[in-house]
Amino acid sequence: SDARFSKAADHLMSSNLGFTDHVSLKAAMFSFYKKLVASNSYIPTTKVKSTVTLIRATAGHKQAESLGQDYGLAKVCSGSVAVHEVEGDHETFIQGKSAKNVAGIINTTLQQ
Image 1: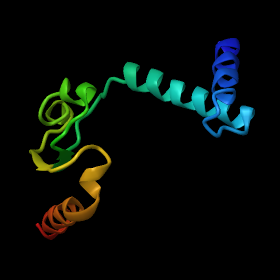
Image 2: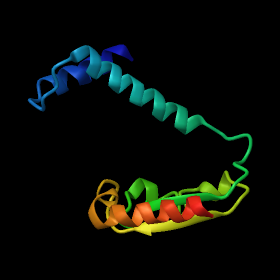
Image 3: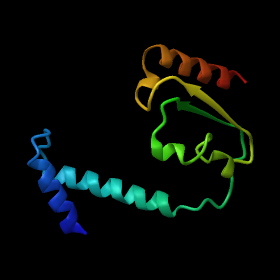
Image 4: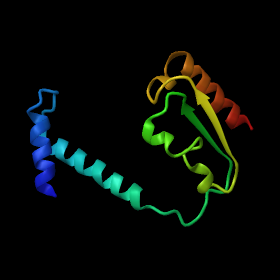
């Protein structure tokens, strides 16, 4: 409800974490909430009809790990799902040496 978002925004505004715009913060929280609701209720009616490449970090997030090795893509793809793992977590696997590995996987995939 609107009151919940307002109360949460009030709490964050007083947390000294650098939030300065109550209206924008509340709008961002509402937007994120709506995305969660949509993703939770979405049921695909068709499958992706091509090969899919997933590049995932080796240090996975617990929620993502519950989706399986391919994050559940095989359920929504009629083509094959190629899974590549790159060292790091959700943020660091696209930095430094790991970023070069990601770029190499992308370049190889695009050349196929």
